[in-house]
Amino acid sequence: MIINLLAGGPQELVPSLSDAKWTCDKWVGIDRGVFHLLNEGIRPVKAFGDFDSVSQEELYYIQQQLSELEVYPAEKDKTDLELALEWAMDQNPTCIRIFGGTGGRMDHGYATIQLLYRALLKGIASEIVDQTNIISMHEAGRYTLQRNEDYQYVSFLPFSDTVENITLVDFKYPLTNQTIKWGSTLCVSNELLHETGTFSFTKGILMMIRSND
Image 1 (cartoon, rainbow, N blue to C red):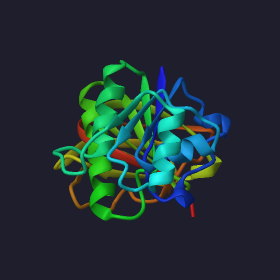
Image 2 (cartoon, helix red, strand yellow):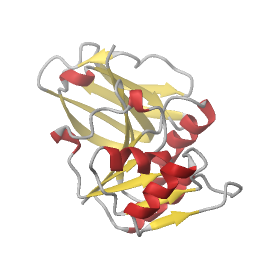
Image 3 (tube, one colour):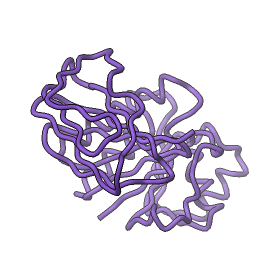
Image 4 (tube, one colour):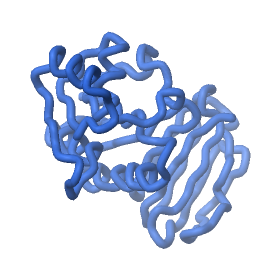
């Protein structure tokens, strides 16, 4: 089961939600993202937020459309997105995608990236998606990567202090058993040479960013 979350980030950074590659089993709206989903003709199964980013008229419209509305106070210990992610993880999905989680405030954007780690600890694949990036997080292992013309560049950044024995096969810039440390830019802006390539490492947490210009 795939669950897509739409947060209230800048809509110009959100890819077309009707694109077949973003097909999912359940949509969840977060704050202003709920309003945008309804405008796209998508009815979320759940909606979370303090709704401080919508007008009274927009909130009334949301309330008329949805019964599964989780309204929280603006002053709380968790962001609206974290509350929605926790609900999504409890549904035992195979994958969670987060849209509308980038752009605008850097603190919110970096917190969203850290939420990927929360999902990783639960054994749930997750990614942040916008018009120019797909961000995911991986634990030690071997992975096969498919070419994606919409996000042709591939970068790998250590999320842990070190990532050991990273090996890149069928990449423009290959590596063999290289250890990279926090702050390293060695693996920024690579490309696949063929339709597929592999990356592997033996220890650490690795963040992958697929991007375009």
